[in-house]
Length: 331
Image (cartoon, rainbow, N blue to C red):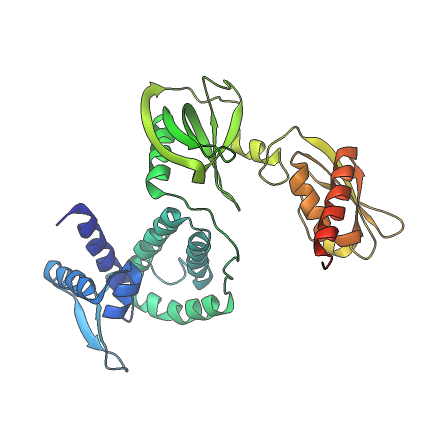
């Protein structure tokens, strides 16, 4: 069998071992996104390779197949909450179109479940189902960035090997793709997904963002590079209010007394400080760039948030408020 098929058969065997009830053909179809005939062939491959597969008929008269577990992990070493949190993490990653990372976490979860002792799995299963039903994850409306798995794989390999990459990058303004060498440092995942890197030819020593969806192709170069020991991806991200990078500024916001309780529940930025005022209002201070993203957030508070500094943000919020209100007016 080709490697890809063998890998899926191995995953199916782990799933059969991890599932206390066993899997139906419909389960296999949904899990691997295949048709009925392919699901049957995968099941048959596991039956040929594993001598201990058990077939049983459920209450709906459907055949199910499972592999009895000889698990070594007892109940108490992992709780239902911990396993449910892993399931939730997989759903979040799939919702955000990070399929490769979702499958990596799913693989860990399958191995964990396969290692549970049968009695532990039986005791935990009802609690896990209840938690997953009670903690649903809404699908975010609107567009989501597409991430090509082969591009992520290549960049991750280059990061681990400490080698430069050469990528074809499409400009959002001209839509033309150009080639460039890059030293990859890491990823920032959010509403848009970015690669953080330094170009030794165009902007040496300066880290910049590159939209993953705009990378047309990438290959690993022969040249290695020494990662800047002073660079921190966390500190780089904290320079911005959202993702957009620009010169950080001292930000001061004032929340009216009626909005102060809600504002206390927000972490606007890791560097923030909150100051209670005698009239019940709240002053928030932090240092970051990304004024356009801040302006959009300020607007969501309506008139309950007043920008005290800097002047550039005051002006931007005023212009954006007028522009949005004009668009709202009926023709």
